Amino acid sequence: MTEPGATPAPPGPGDRAVSPGPAGPAEPPTARARRVAVVAWAAIGVLVLAALVLWALARLAIVVVPLLIALFPAAALTPLRHRMVRSGWPRALAALTLVLGLLVVIAGLVAGPIPALVDEIPTLVDSIATAVQQLQEFLARLPGGARLGNAEQLAGDAAAAVLGADPVAGTVGVAVTAVTVLSGVVLAVLALYFLLYQGDRIARGAADLLVPRRRRADALELGDQLWTTLGAYVRAQLLIGLIDAVLIGLGIWLLGVPAVVPLALLIFVGAQVPIIGAFVAGSVAVLVALADGGLGVAAATLAVILGVQFAEGQFLEPALMSRLVRLPAFAVIVAVAIGTALLGVLGALLAVPVAACVVRTGAFLRDRRARGEATAS
Image 1 (cartoon, helix red, strand yellow):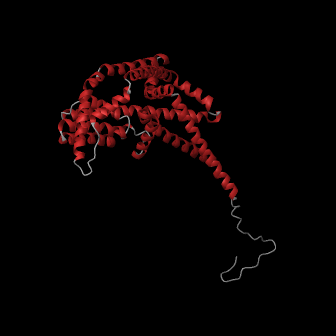
Image 2 (cartoon, helix red, strand yellow):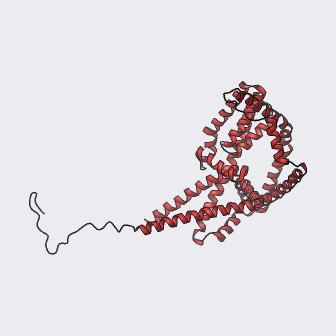
Image 3 (cartoon, helix red, strand yellow):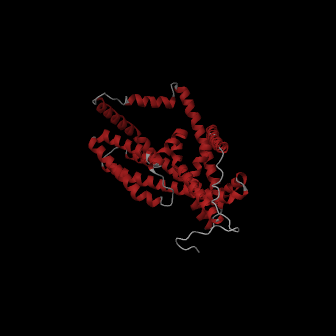
């Protein structure tokens, strides 16, 4: 041991000088460039594959769209089918009962509220046209003389878009569309039955065909989580839409706004597209109130809609979707915009659940990676 202030002894012949080791060879520029090129080509490959998938989906829309539609009720009804099977129902009978029950509910809607909706559509259209005309007159008085266009011309353009310039050709087009829709409905019903009857077997078969053996357990677990997320989302959105339609419909009925039934149905449908759908449906209700009752009734209608939406966002949605992936409002808007641009109305309906499933997949992969690192350490 060396005393303080003493000169340390020189190293002996057996002593070895310890010097810090090298920090490691720097990565050659060529290797870095090669890695960047691999990542870039991988990104290009993913984009090309996505474009090919979208092209194939567009070509096979008559098959893909009914299958996508069938996923929603199948995921929502799967827990009920599980309970029926545990109670002793045969799988096939449970699936058939649920499909027939859903068809009965749809038939009840067609026989009940839908005719009332059809009867009040002329009133709704007249109210919207009157509101547009009032807004047009108001904007014309502003500096610059902005105009919204003639409401009657807009209605004529909409009719021309449906039937086309040639009424005969338009009628044939409508008939072809009706046949296409009918075939899609039949395919969706069949797909719904088999998803409820053999959904787990279909998932295992797809995993055996597409996923390597060492990853199949993870793929099936992820599939179960995504299926549960989708089903819970559909059930929650339907309940939220129903509550919104009842509360807002009651409010505008008390305010004396006409066409309450079609407006309530529009609000229910709009609630299935978060934020964007509620905005569009609420705008229509405010326009109808403006045309029928003036600015005061329109302001009261807007207050009712905003109050219900605030209560939904603060209390109802957190209670129903506490176990789901809740996306930021901006992410929802972007997802709906992308879905609408790609698939129209169907894309708007699919956008948010697809985005939630993507987020759920990312969380699953991060959890698996963390477990792997913990096991390795």
